[in-house]
Length: 527
Image (cartoon, rainbow, N blue to C red; front, side, top):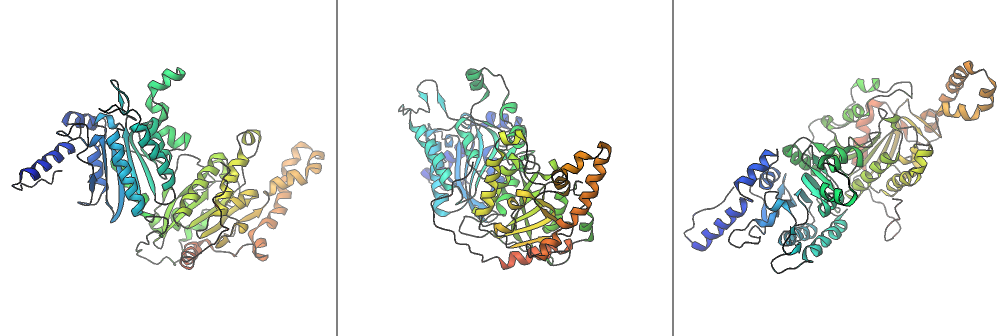
């Protein structure tokens, strides 16, 4: 929308005219084609994202034609989102396919520098054909035939985004294509929402893939939202359309501080977070430790208004990660999911949890671990795939996290899974259990299969199942969390209805928590 006002000054009127030209992007035909694809334009997206009249655009007059500026296919600037400043680089597909050109990348660099110096979040909206190709003068070339200029600027982009990590929140929203170099922008970001059927990313597009390895494949099958949100794990959230994607960005940032030196915003909460939870929470956990139930239901009962912002819901489903609030305080949740592989921690689950813990720890978001874990995945396939290395990644992340950490043993907590889910040795500020909880090296049935092997081998085959069940029933009371409580290995066994009250109090008393580590450059991560 133009803010042009007739000033009576030729220079000022000309300025507004040039701005109006730039705001038209690639023109009506290109805008119509964008809409036909089911996508908003770059400027329509920023109007949804920013608070009214707060966005300041840098380099709107940029482009190859001084008389007809097109912002070089990139909208760059800063403004307020829900009252807080963020930086934005949004690629405009209506102008040269949103390709990365020299002027556009200079603008993008400017916004990155401003965001980092002023320490507010950075958002990229990806809808780009990748690096600009000029058939006359070569890759990324401009009129002066500067063939390396674009390489230089994109090199700075990757380095700077890596160095910004953990200082300010980074969002790489996929709302269109992002192949080749542009794929590393979301790859280096903290949060990557993807629009279903409209967004694609990969290190090479279908044409180059066919040329290099002879594989014929569509954009969607190569790097669509289903691929990256369900298979690769690069995407964090699959959404239906551009509007939902913009809202997801706003919701995500609402849980975060502007930078690593601040604490997350505390929102006003109407109600008393210390009241007991509904009796229905007592009905969720089955007596049978092998019977599945909905951990999502548990999470939503604990959180303010049942609102849970889940991260990577379709990838590594045996681990649940996401954000919520308790009494207005932001909290990150790591929970085992009994509905998927019994909640066992496999490679994807370990990677998912480790990354989430690192993000929360970087931005001072307390962590809640809801443990119902049978342990880590075992077997030849798991070992050959590196379960030790990936599991160590999760253990490393949980161990080094200095934010407030709270652990609730909801049901079982076996083996190394107990440690990975922030067991006592990992310095939780609160560790409690629900009455049906069990802590052990392994489950009762596993113990019987090992320690009763001679007895089982000697018994008739038809009697073995009954023998295992009988011996397991004798062992199970020894695993119950009351035994751990008796030895002060946990802080308490609590009534599940007290969960929200106890967590709210823990969030209150850990507000000023400080941990001092041995000085070092950085840990050596088992990636």
